[in-house]
Length: 192
Image (cartoon, rainbow, N blue to C red; front, top):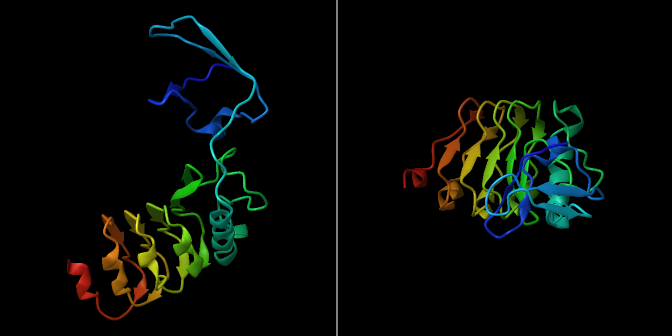
């Protein structure tokens, strides 16, 4: 089966969207160069690898997220029985070098509450959970997600107050919490 791919600048063969390629680590792969200096050359690989497995601590956090937000009822579910994010695609999850960098569960029938352990995903850049039925409050220690660039919790059932520690997220570019049940005032620190 012909599949188009590209080489990264460090010489590693990169397959994008591995879930669409239907490959396994035990598969053999033959690469046919179709352009460039090595045109028409062929390279054979006896094993396919998909990068580092997710570190155990982060995998355990994903399990807690699924369990506390009724993962069995999601529209697109995660198989939390094994840590295999480097060999199969989990809906809405992106990894890099064995770390979770993005969770996007937009409109996925997510309910329940966010576990406080979510702030242990230190490499997380994007957390988009909009258009769901999440209750509870924003974790009080959300400021521990120091790499966070996008936090979208809009159109849920969340309540409580917006924690002022969000202003400590120096990399945050998008913060969306509309259409929830938050109370109190918007922390003045957010104006910075």
